[in-house]
Image (cartoon, rainbow, N blue to C red; front, side, top):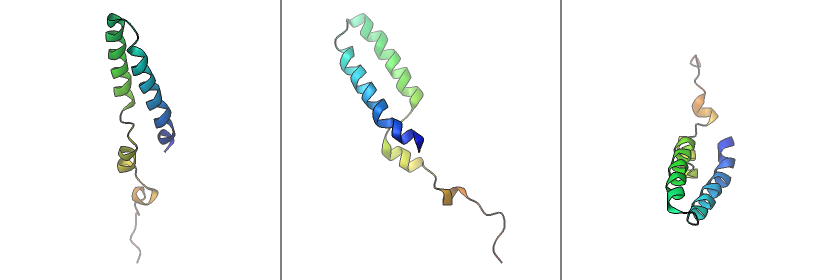
Length: 69
């Protein structure tokens, strides 16, 4: 759940970086775009719905060792 709080600020960072890359020369832009792709791939998916789909609740995590009699 800690990752959920990071997603909006990280996504805003990427959006701002993409905007600012439009203002640099073509050679530098190619390098920056490559590094931005690497950063995005390292962080993985920041989509909130993906987080919710992959999240496992405590009830889902807990496995009883013995059946109730």
